Image (tube, rainbow, N blue to C red):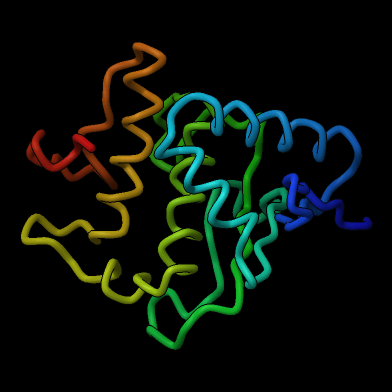
Length: 169
């Protein structure tokens, strides 16, 4: 299908690759995230204003969970863009925990943002409790939305409990 651009007032873009219904839902989710908190709005604005190409598309059928790829995230080779796989209808994480799908989108937007500003490699480093710093920070941004919605906080990643002060933005 033809990618559709999500344009800001300056005409910069995030590409959305999907049919009309998918594109409309992703645009709605990006707009919702942007109005909920200035930190979340900054994630979306940074990606829209980036000189790199960021694409949001449905996950593949063989890996149906949200993810972010590209930009040398683990190698530190720099960023030319990312591909965010996001299913706006999937409310389960890879660990089968229920949450609003757009909370998962916030997590992936943070990964794309960290690559975009050049910190993806540093954030791939493991913490002393065995979770990558990138995932700790992505969960912090998720917790902003969790707290706004009154839905608790995320206190673990990949089955690893993380001390509570780490999770708060």
